[in-house]
Length: 205
Length: 251
Image (cartoon, rainbow over the protein chains, first blue to last red):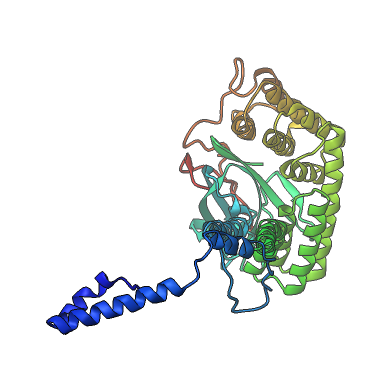
């Protein structure tokens, strides 16, 4: 609290008037001065000594399991902690795989694609689809369309490269392409057809 | 902030950086299989096999493909797991073969390509010959696939390897290598015999002087033989073509 009489002047002027007020003010001022003179003079180095004593006090680690905790954090750590948290989130999101999607399609980089026509003559079939390494072997993903004379046809874009596939007849019979020259055992007792798609055209191997 | 706090943040950052790296591929295997409805016990067995493969420096992608293929075909779970385990062994042999050819640390695509080439009965020495001719993983892997494709088209494995290794040593790129099977079909469509096709392919190289007619640009149908009549009651493939030509687009 300030004891400066000048600071109290306006209030006194507003609340009192005339000579009696001035005499009271002088009385208070003299009393205050007498009180100040009675106080011991503080050492000028006291403030520095107190600060040094506080700095030298051993710090206690805040237990992490105590929540809510009250701790003091220097301002410089706040942006650093935020940056660390951001790094954690970024790393977690950047390194986590996509939750779905066929493995082949996981190669997200743009690649050359070529339109490839699959054809199978199956006059007695009720449905025909093509499934292969390009669609995660999903027998329902690429149904073919029945054309004249029972020839089933499908045109799809495929990335250049090598692909294995089979035809799926009536939803359950897996059959290799009868005219494909590229073949390999599928490891399950069947045979996959193999196709190599070049950038200038497609060839049945 | 105390040292404990600093250490805690450091540990958190290290865990966040390292743990996802270690778990991402494992989770990726599981996620890919679960997304296709694969049974839980098969997912776990394949994930374990993928773990072993990665620990041995082998790729896990082909194992996921094989498991998905078996599941889609209705193969019982134990047989799927058996086929996946067998594929792990095949890739281990493929890696050893690549190392014999001088590739100390073969990338996954090379290992998978060698495994596929061996599956299609390409001899180890022929595989090594292609491996030695390549300068990059992509070209080596493509060279192996094209060599097996040319052999399947009737060129003969030794000749197919010679055609491919010659093209690779001439600096042909991946796209040019992938075009070789179509070019061979074009020569077949011209009515040339296999001997003449072999001579031309070995003599000219892809698009080189004295070479063969290419498979054509957009709209070409290198496999464009007219379809034979369908057998009664059976199924046949009248052949495929490239009706819309080639294009470049997102894969």
